Image: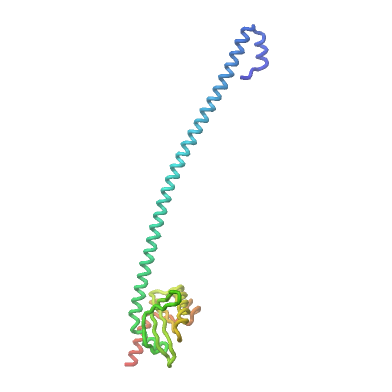
Length: 230
């Protein structure tokens, strides 16, 4: 406790015994005040520590909840990815089934269609896996082999319900690979139920050697030739 100079002067005027008692009282007051301040500060510090501890506990609990939620989300994403993969397989299987259905239906008409469209006399028609070095292969939907005036020729057809630009790109890539294996002139036919205008423009502009033919046209042209011969 701080004591002013004026108070000290007043105390000095007192009797020695009383002066000693008064100084002792002042010292005790100062000591108690210091102790009270220290205890108050300590209690405040303890409260701060308690608050921080509780906040940490709440934070850890929240982090635990977030970790559980993240784990649950990851499991759900894995399930969705698995479902998506299964759906892709199902769609791919359905697409193959539709494609095979088109091939099987059109196979009997290919010789007459090839004769009328390209002048190709067909010797055989089949679905074939053409193998390359390294174990790779292409599945050719329709492969017809024959001749034109003694020259060996092949008709390569790919069948799908609905054609897209990527289908054309893949088909053209396959034709390039087949040209290295099949020794003879190639005729390429892109068969589908329908072609979107942008796909038609794309194929005509980029791959003019690929003939786009709708499924019903194959049958109509083949039947036209058969009727003419009869």
